[in-house]
Length: 182
Image (cartoon, rainbow, N blue to C red; front, side, top):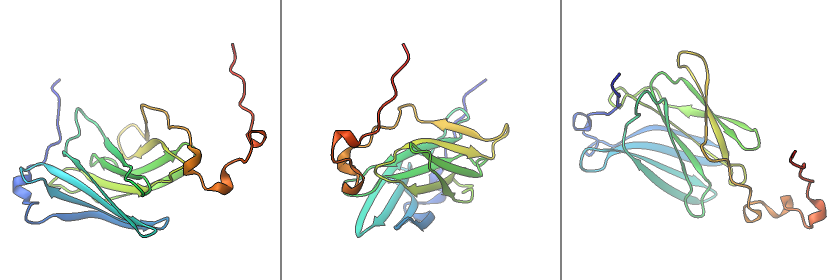
């Protein structure tokens, strides 16, 4: 069985002359847009721009490929002074995606229609600084929903990221940690 790679022919799309917004939205106080453009040598660049509380942030990801039957490529942009932002690029068979945070909170991710020129869907959602991404649930592929867990567990919340009202003032206010069985 050979490997398959989902590359788009960007010379046919002329994204250098016509970058396009593939999906945009507003939620949780954040305005955002995801744009597809060429990097100048024919490679897809996905650019995310978002504004929250007067702070604007932009990050970009090169490449359009999903390798060997992958359903998802994801990135979390962590730009200085801005909230984290989850960017998804999915295979066309994915119809719904849900971000699952470390707290267990579930957030539906807005997905674009399939862009045939890319053979991808694009999606994104702003995340909370103090509740990192734990997994992404995908629906639509044959065989039912699938969970894509992060290969690293979410990092612990840093007290500097939590509003002062939520940080315990003393160690006595912390919940006890259950003992590990021997």
